[in-house]
Length: 230
Image 1 (tube, rainbow, N blue to C red):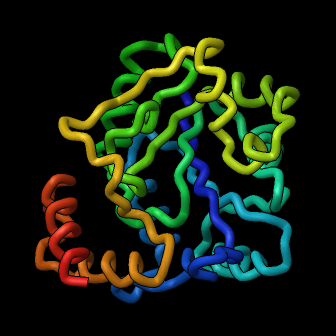
Image 2 (image 1 turned 90 degrees about the vertical axis):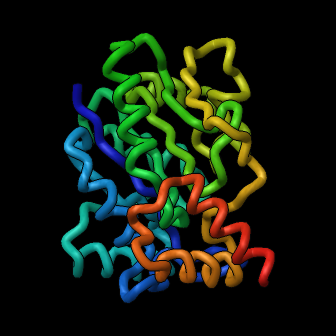
């Protein structure tokens, strides 16, 4: 079974422009994410998917500089961007990760891949957001390439073009979806970088001693304490 990963990235964020290339501990957020994904032996290839907008020339330049795989496609129709990329990338499933998620959790990815292998194509999507119990920024979706490409003909609404998995969740009765739940419900916790305050808090987290050894629940608790102080 071939699994690849697509990291969705763009410069033009309304609340925090250029956030994916902002540095945490002297390393760009995008690079933090890609390096985590590359550590997985199950992921054959990781590709940064950005747009053809001139503002995203910076992402192309960065990918070339760091020797990262990248693809450029539609800015507004993100579903088509993925579909165009997947037309030339042969795989059975692909993992979708957003580039504003520097705390993306390798153990969650490993666990979902375990279920993917265990059930052997029984499900079309393996996720931890339907329904969500993990914090935002810890979202992982593993999607059948075949199902994704076949359904591009159904992507008519703007919300489905912008949010590439929303169509499947809105029509969940038509698809087989496996959802991984967390032991507690942390759906209201935000561990992604949406704005300047999020960036500051996650910067603090990364600078905690032995941060990489913390469990997800320990990270959440420390984030809560930091958030209360701010």
